[in-house]
Amino acid sequence: MRIPTCVWATLALTAIPQLVHADTGPTGADSAPPSVLGTEVAAGRGQGHWRNYGIEDGLPGLDVQAVLVDRDGFLWFGTDGSGVSRYDGNEFVNFTTHDGLADNKVWSILQDRQGNLWFGTQGGGVSRYDGVEFTTFTTQDGLPSNFVGSMAEDRLGNMWFGTSYNRENAAGLSRYDGERFTTYTTEDGLPTDRVTSILGGAQGRLWIGTTEGLCRFDGQDFTTLTTQDGLAADVVFSVAEDRDGILWVGTFDGGVSRYDRKVWTTFTTADGLVSDFGRSLTEDGEGNLWIGTRGGVSRFDGVSFRSFTRRDGLPH
Image (tube, rainbow, N blue to C red; front, side, top):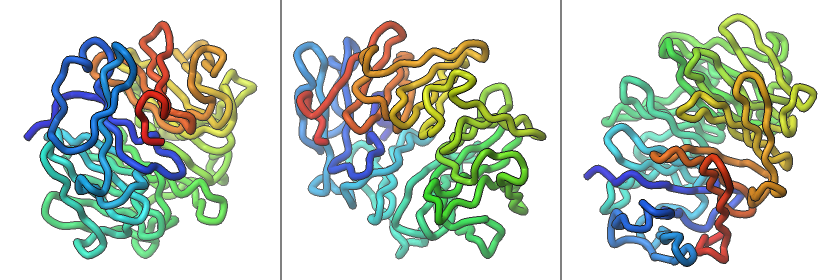
């Protein structure tokens, strides 16, 4: 069953008590929920509704750290200690280390161009799932650290892995070409080995979020952009590119920056953002940008922000 286009918000916080599905705005407010599972909560008058999912619905754990909609329309959720869950619109199917997953703490999920699913874990390395079985890569295979918090695929089909942004487990950035791993660190031009996010841009560049700025890699050299260049804050937690090729950067306590390759524009709570901690970013099918923060979730329609918090039905 293909799940209808909608917005799924995990907010990727330190602890998330439930998974949230949002039908908001003029289109979402009239669309039917994907299943009878979950608890429907009004998002405010004229703002559609939230549908919250928890353990009682089949979700294996309440601390959701990663979400992916695969090419078949299935939803995948990575949890912090309970493995991975797949939702087909009717039920959750869960996978753990007993099924071959590298570790039950899954903080990043990606689907490559061949359809394989990749799961970055906290301590077990990276698992690749081909729909039948899991294959795990660790430091014994050349990965610089078994703590992988971010992933991306470049236009050549190489896989990139960002190691944990926690200082004790950070080991830089690693590229996997299908045969071997190549690792990049501060010795190669990274501003720090603490990588928080990776984006394979439409122009072939790789964008790397770090705790010391946003780094751009053109295949040969790293260039770091910081507050001195117009970035909202040097600690970057999320990077996304919208349909127009505009780069969006979520920072720690600096708000969200928009970069059109020429000019930086920063949005903060003063502009309507619910919080200045931009933990996660995604664009929906209508071109709205959703920003997950510690204080709730904000939707930007290109003109103004509409924010949702616990008062609007979010569970946390």
